[in-house]
Structure formats: structure tokens, C-alpha cells
Length: 221
Image (cartoon, rainbow, N blue to C red):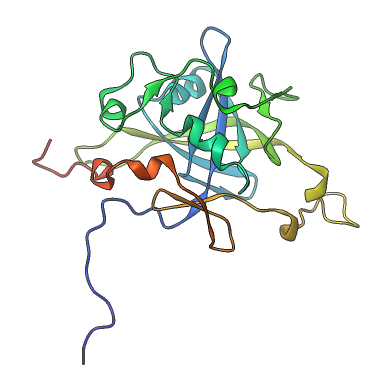
């Protein structure tokens, strides 16, 4: 009997995760935003996967905190405005290869308004329906003993403050979210979707060849 599956070797395995915008404080006191899709939540903790060469990585390691802003499905233009940008200057070579450019003020580039923080120093993003202030609890290196080891940091952070737009609060409850009112932006294989699986717009990240994301294998550079 013929197999129901075939073996393939995708360069990326982005099956679908929420788009998060991580805001941090730069060393000069200005503010940075990093769009991420490598994030998952467990209880009141979150794991964030970020390039070791990222400005956001340096900021979290230095300050021990960040703000996790969740993008909704009506924010495609704003997310794309900063999708291929970096706060690092000079731009790391791996990002140059993918067409990234340095942008100092990502709040201005995306048209975002700063939301004053309550428990951390970094501002949130007012336009995001969900804003979570977080503190660093642990740092892990990804990729073990492979040639790519250390190229990505995984930050374990504790969510210490959650703020949402009032429309997301479930009627009759003080601290529950109405999932019918929440429309997260999902990234799946570098394309942007809403949770109804209707594509919500063209993603600038999809302009990058997926092979540029392929992990380095032993014996190859």
C-alpha cells in the first residue's frame, strides 16, 4: 500500500505562531522593537527565540526585561514596516544577506504610539491589543553541539503585568479574555494570516528566500 506521507526537507519549520513585537530599551535610552514569531507561552512565562546578534538580545541581557506586544490581524502594514529592519548598527552580515536595514526609531517607522510602562522601563505599543511586561528569568543557547550553536538565544521571561484593550475582556469576568474578540496575527512559513486561515496581506519577510534560513549543518559553512 502506498504511503500516506512523503519525506521532504524544508528550510524552515514555521508551522504557525503568533506575531509578537518585543520592545526594549537601548543602551542610549532610546527604544527598540523586534518582530518575532518564535514565542510560546506556558502559564505566566514566555519563551522567546532571538538571534544572538540582535539588538534586542543585547538589550534584554543588559536590562533583564522587555515588553511583549501581540500583533492583531489588522496590523499588517505596521508589522511589514519594521519586518526587515534591525536596531543593530552595523547590520549583522546574516541580516544583510536577507535585505535588512538599520532603523534607529522603529516606533516612528511603524507609526506606533508608546504606551507608558507600569512595572518595567520599556514602553509598550498602544496600537497592540495585548501588552505584557516581562522580566528575564533564564537564558538558553539553541542548537546544542551543531555548527549553529549559540547563534540563537532563548529567553525565558516571567510576565509581570498584562494590559489589554477593554474590548478583549470577557463580559462578566474581571480577568478573562474573550477569544471571540481576539484576532491574533499568525505567521506561517513567513506569510501572515488571521486565525480564520484567510491570508490577510503580503508579508515582506516572504520576499526572503527560505533557504537563507536553513540551519548550518556539520561540515558546511
